[in-house]
Amino acid sequence: MKIKTFFSQAYLYHKGRRAAFAAEEFILHEIGYPLVTLIFYCLLASYSFNTQDLTSWVIGNAFLLCTNVCVFRLGHVFDGERYFGRLRSIIASPCKKLPLILANGLFPAMFAIAASSCGLIVGAVIFGVDFSHVNIALVALAIVCAMFSATCFGLLLSMVGLITDSMHLVLNIVSYLLMIFTGAEFPISQLPLIGRIISQLMPLTKAIAAMNTLFDSHSESFWMLIIAELITGAVYAIMARLLFGFAERQARRNGRFDLF
Image (tube, rainbow, N blue to C red; front, side, top):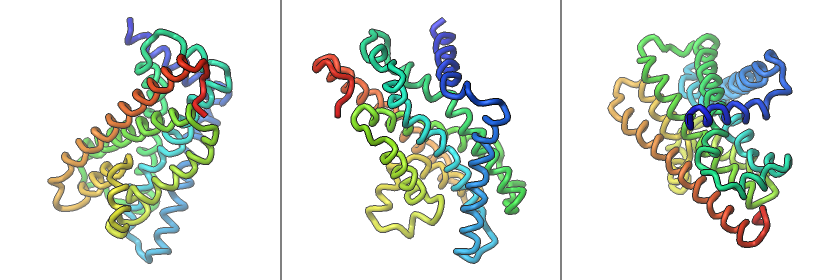
């Protein structure tokens, strides 16, 4: 029964956010817009680096397609709850908060997986990325792990909405940090030491690296990178729960639902 309640709550959250869209509008917004973005950045990389082998850029930008969902949409979860007047009930209710947090990310994670998969397909069709010698099951596993990590990261960002009223600024900065530090647009080896350290703390970095190993002749590090990505996502989920617990205690102690 609890599992059924969890999925019902997740579906209601999804309907509440996207009910105004018709089916074709929803598909174009979730899939069409990100794919145009992928094509743009891959063409930019082709001319900037003067190369026809765009495999690494297709992989990186396909994974970054989750940014629209996992960063911008999930990042505004509690900002939206405040706007619609539900934050009081969420904070004050005695229910467990972790299922509530995870329910917010279930459908966005599914759509992020679909967007990234479509990105890889478009990359194969338009930019000639060859998947014929790659284990598709491992590709699917890398995508799922990457979207799990990115979704947990988005949920952590949503907690920042309890601390600041400048979420638009925060989320836009984070989206560019993902472009810089995940290895999607240029190799991490080109970053300075502090940049390479930051990159290992970001979501997607290790999943993108794992995906790239599948196209190399040596892929022994794939499983280690995938496990590291899962651990990164789990840490983000734990941090999100801890930050929410802190905000909850402060709200009950001070009689306020915002920390700013």
